[in-house]
Image (tube, rainbow, N blue to C red; front, top):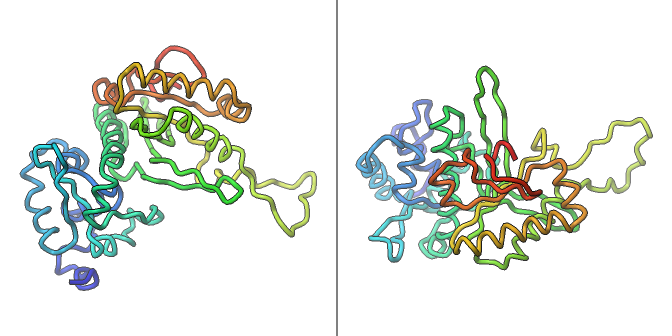
Length: 306
């Protein structure tokens, strides 16, 4: 069965203004790579029961558009991902245009990527739940995983996710963006801190104009490359988990040391808010709680106030 044969509206699988649930599931799996049944429920129907997803998920699997793996030691929890046909079908949907095409389309790939990918989605769900409590705007499509930007010398920095969030404060709408790094303590603390250097390189990166005249003194300069995508440089949030609190506090202190010791990171930190928090604290108190340690020092505070 090919994706092409599944696109006509008579199949019920083509995107439509009414956003049927099976369409939303396909889009969510295309966006987030892999998700458990419970995560899909929290993402798409947070007030409903698991039963509401059983029919659409069974239909998508029977039509060869999605499949699942059973997570080990999880009471048979299913983690869903798109099949190759499902990935092709969703590739050009309007809500997903411009998103990085890194689908997980096999059980083997799903098993390798599952722990980190599901933890990144846990982080998104904490922000989404907090937004609902606060009546802010942050939905399923306001979180883009694995966003890559060039930083010069043929190198790139890849954020685990880019967060878009609109805080509603009276009649004001405050637009917030963040690069999110989710750390499961699988790399050394030093390698984690080096991510700050990569972001500082992105913050300062301006490609050289080869073969062109030097700009006149009064000419308008294009500026750093990040201005192509963001009106202001996104804040940088580190979310830590999968280790003891003592270990996670130590990793946070190593991030603070990088800010204090590296001149380019220190220059960025004077303009870009930087913070770190423990994932379980986000899930318990919400990201808007006083759970974020500013990497420039100071008392814990909400992420919006870093």
